[in-house]
Length: 482
Image (cartoon, rainbow, N blue to C red; front, side, top):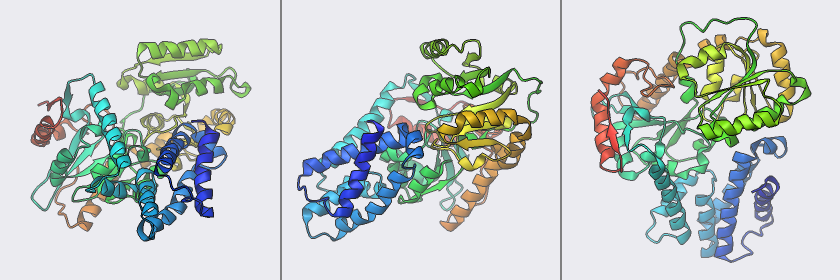
């Protein structure tokens, strides 16, 4: 859906509610089509058209409409004497990301007489999850590749803590979650943020205790704050990047002006081609760039063709699939990092720049990243229209920035683990749960993501227990390595 059509659908909803025209059309099928169109419009605006939305109506505009009109819909749903109006209002509130959507959707899902639209919505949701599962090429999954125990349960009054950092759809099933939440408080990190698009996350909020979401971006945290039995902490993924005792040796002059680190398998979201277009501007003429990232051969080749088509082959170096351990040395040869993704969740690449003392410029329309990180020490977050000018300015003054100093003080494995531990301890005590030991140190990379191999061994029995529960519910083999 194009930007103008999507924005007009949201504006039309606001106009019709304000004018009192919403229920003039007493046609359930027409309202169903409108809800479907609105969902697609929100997806278009808040995912694919973010830069334009930021520049014009503002990124908060769709949420503002939902906040303001949600109260009116709630009044219809609870107080209208007209059954048609009452039911249609309930469907709007449950099937679109209004504040409190997940609780309302769960209520309609559990109703004895389910509405056909709700049944179809849930069926499509299940189909998407099933498709993801069926597309996984591996038939044996290692527990440590997508979750890790951070703290063991000690007794009936002291639960453990379980971190889920990948493949969340594997455990988004009631029997699995019921078993897990009896033993653990869940700390989940949605891999790509913007959790409103995946309302199956509501299933994680059905346990005895609230589900804790690790979300870097304020947009995601604000959405979660309106959901029942859900809390958001501003820590996830890249925040737990392991610390380097000694950064790679920095040589002058640097080999590259810019570095862009993002997978070639998702270039639409990561905006590789937009980065190439920026390099064609006069202000950046002559600037060299290094492109890193994982990628299948056909996608890397497509990118190389795009580089050649723009006449940038002499200025752009492409290094795909570099082992993670070699990335810091390459970053040390770069003066400035640039990241332009449409959405993330606590982007690892940006933290890698900071750790290697490379300042960074990002698009301010990016979801899933804490824009407050970009300061006089670290770089800048600016609208797309100011990127070229800002990149040129930061390059000219790169020596004035101190991103590694910021990283060591504000982020990284040790600092972020301590902050997460403090937050968890406070919440446990508020919920009446005992707390006799702290969580272990987290990292953001590697199969286990433990700061110490001893910690992985320490939780071996817990991981075996989890694997057994998953084995009975999913068409995979689950392994726990000794």
